[in-house]
Image 1 (spheres, rainbow, N blue to C red):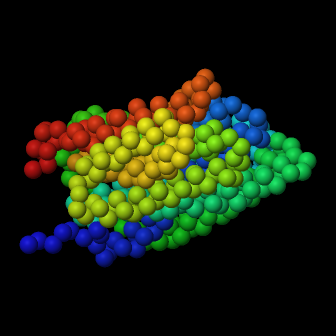
Image 2: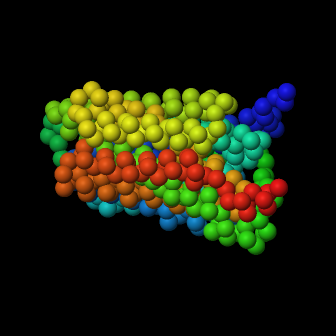
Image 3: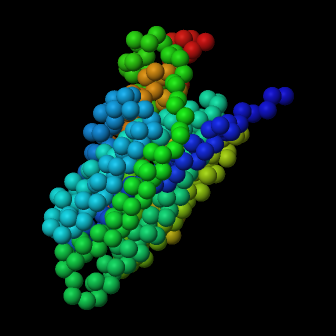
Length: 416
């Protein structure tokens, strides 16, 4: 019997470790927003809809930068593209310092937008790069494992954010407090983020990462450059839009949901459920990566989509412990979706891989639109009803896991 293909090859081990560290790093930039939303909501006296602009600015940056990032990375290569993205991230994080001094909500949104542009470069580079660092048969497992460290960062970030933002805000509330004082609290956390981003830029810039040549085109070269020739990619872009929209929307309003269903809880207490939600996310990522040794990635994606539908039904229809269990379990069932959708979508793209990756990163705009829809629906009704939005999103992810991921016969025949 033939042994199963390895996760990676020895020559790729250090590059895989180094690039995987980026997945941990950009989790900080993404998930600290879940702490920033309730903090800025109080500092600027915002509605749920207005506070959702944090995600609109952040994921809007992802959307607008993704296609230019793909074009630039084609010319710079993966390694220099990663360094360029890290420098942009550090610039956006540093600008939080003057934004805190001038105390204007729009200034914070501009900083988040710039950070997201840098992280868009990291996503365009790192996700496909990981899939090439080993046998094609284990690309989904490899990307899920790398994304597991993103989940680890997602768990660490609320602890870091709660200690440096929410806990300090709570202390301010005990004394004479102003919105300007609350806004100024974010300076220290973002200066720490600046130092981390710059340190990684130096480390990766000085490292010797292998240059990756994409697999031969599955269609002729001129056709392969047009991503519209790959229907499974376009369905993957839609699935990623809905998944990211659901994942960001849920995480953005975990604290708000806990306070609505259990009145009287402080931000700090409610943030514990966000930590549990993200802990379940991390467990699902590591566990899902291991399970892909035995189960097909698409089948697992469909199964986790069904789990998400069941969990969100608990959130929508109950208010007791079952609702809290549902909000935590959603983190677990979100876990494998992003890397699995990504890896399934870029299969058979050949030279169009970078452009396909750019489209998949652009689909992260769902993280701007769905939280805004949830915020608007929450203001009109309540935050519990707003979870109808992720319910719709999971239905399309289920379709992609069952049928949408399959390449067309034309692509498969060209690959033979």
